Image (cartoon, rainbow, N blue to C red):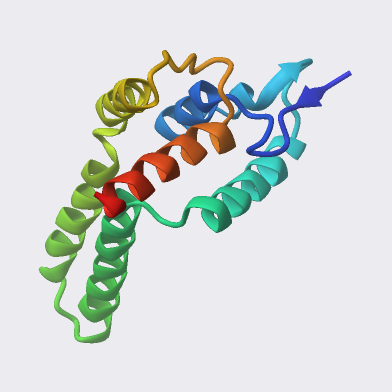
Length: 145
């Protein structure tokens, strides 16, 4: 029987980061073999995450570059200016690069959260919601100082 992590209250932050970095939905599995249901579950987790945390700067940058890419492709074909496709490719590369530092940023975030919270965060046991609750506590504390 297939058993998935289905919410940010269950999914370990380690698994979440692996899925973001590698796109490997098998990190949603508690047991069993991955099925087509994993795509639906991942979409729900991302929706839940976005409602709880909001968008990161790197994701906003990613979306900005993807929008630029799409507009350049449209302009290239509508105005018959094929050279604009080169600029669209650059925007696509910039979009991917905006997400590319994820692993280093993740490890740094875990270290900083551990430092500020005064205990070691175990990424394989700490859920996504717990981890980002810690981040919110730290951010709230910085705003008050």
